Image (cartoon, rainbow, N blue to C red; front, side, top):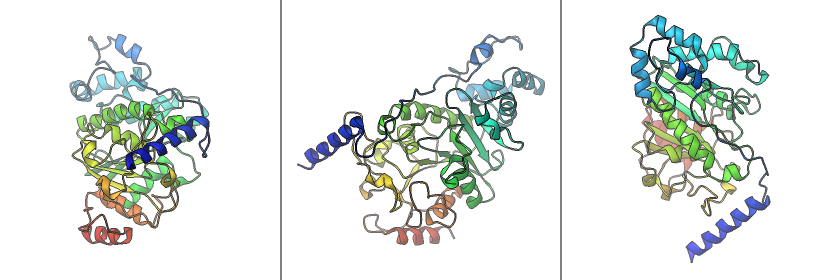
Length: 370
């Protein structure tokens, strides 16, 4: 009987999404940007070094890293100048080279949406101007950091909106900057908008197609960090970004998966994620995501609520956060816990998840990090 009731709820969800009722916003469907970086055809044809270069689409990040390790400084510089858009987005290439390549690519870009990204001193680890644009930026010193975090945002994020000031702590750059400040020395945080996100709350947001494409790109990106000798990251996944992380979980080289404001991870529980990472979940009491049915039916919906005790994730206290974009607000219990996870000194509360309140979880976590 309970399964039948859930099916009816799922059918109602499907009907409301398709018909545009129940507050769902009708938006244009997004075409996922996939494949190799811009300029890859010219890169493949280049014989300036006397031999073929690693294929940007087929070579693994480890193979890319090995290739660059065998080059002289002059050879690296030659490729950087000839192919900045490839080098800047090539997972496994040395991060210092990627910073310089993306600086060149942004300097040559005349689209006003990306002007702020070209400001001196920014560490842009990836930049692709095609479509709505994709970007990744580093906060902190990634090469010397003992702990690394990757932040995966949800809907309405792209290279053009990356620096938006409205709800600053809810935008990717603002979230990453705030987390890095809270986590402190020895950490680095990457704001990764490396996939095509949904626009608005429509069919794209209710289905997993864009998340599937994003999961592959996120996996390759984190493999590139590992190939360049960087520590396995903690991955923070907001809203639709948690769907991406759920689909990528079994392939991600990560220490922790942290989902916040999640509509579901397309998994019934932590075991179904097939990950060795610790899984954490947060949802504040005023987040509208709590009104989204946690069901999957006919390709719509993303499944179980990761904050449900039955899911099996560690609880991140979020009583002090407000709204869907408030989890990184300075002074909140959620940000304090995120910072502890980013530093690697957070521990699971030694209490029963079925009965523990967020306040009790916060006290337990605070005691574990002293």
